Image (tube, rainbow, N blue to C red; front, side, top):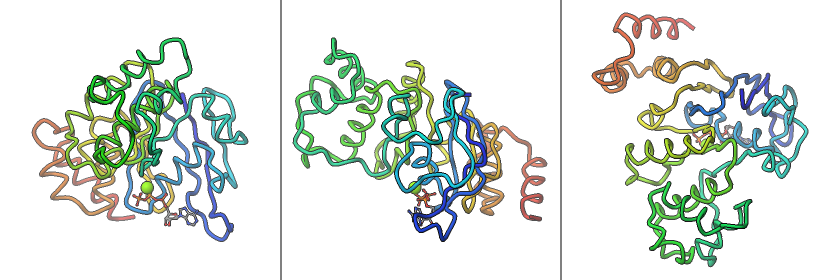
Length: 265
Ligand SMILES: Nc1ncnc2c1ncn2[C@@H]1O[C@H](COP(=O)(O)OP(=O)(O)OP(=O)(O)O)[C@@H](O)[C@H]1O
Ligand SMILES: [Mg+2]
């Protein structure tokens, strides 16, 4: 396991409420692990707690990274160990050139340009066009998002957490994400993918379903998606789009069984 969460519980800053409670699951090295769940179920908060951001300290439980207990480490120490988070809303670092921006996170300073070119290629931006562009409002939202992702890749972290990488990106199609994720994977990085989009989730190997701050199931992704659909009452959707034709991982009987079980709870 690259990352292990054991009974992770995070209260609000004023300690009056619990945001996420008793969350336990592991992320296998080299895998794509998706976190799914409805709005407000605690996905982003979970990522902040793994990153070690202030105000998201655990009141209970622990987090292990490569077997090491990192529960008491701060965000900088965790980043040094190879944990990164690409934000739901990309940061606004205006005015720098793309090359300069990417170089900030590149560890091996001997061949910065080559590494920046590689990172841009991974996110499908032509380095000849973008390396010397300024990061400002002339870049489209999609371009900024890709540059943000390239900057994360250039850091060569062990774990990349992507919080809604598709948010605001109508034009990034699934094939594009598949291409990007597979290239990231080849560089030995593990991906924790937070997403609303079930088609993007389908590229994941494993998944964890969050529901009202708790983790309900961790399993192979289609199984987790099926439970999500059952909890959310999305039977038609589930049968019609998710688990048909190329995606048919389950028989009708099994789908009905899971819907019955979740309905009974
Ligand atoms: N610092 C905080 N103080 C108080 N409440 C918080 C805090 N951070 C998160 N919350 C609450 O915890 C719940 C989980 O929020 P979170 O942003 O983690 O959900 P999410 O699953 O990422 O949702 P979305 O899909 O909308 O991005 C929400 O009800 C949110 O309002
Ligand atoms: Mg969120």
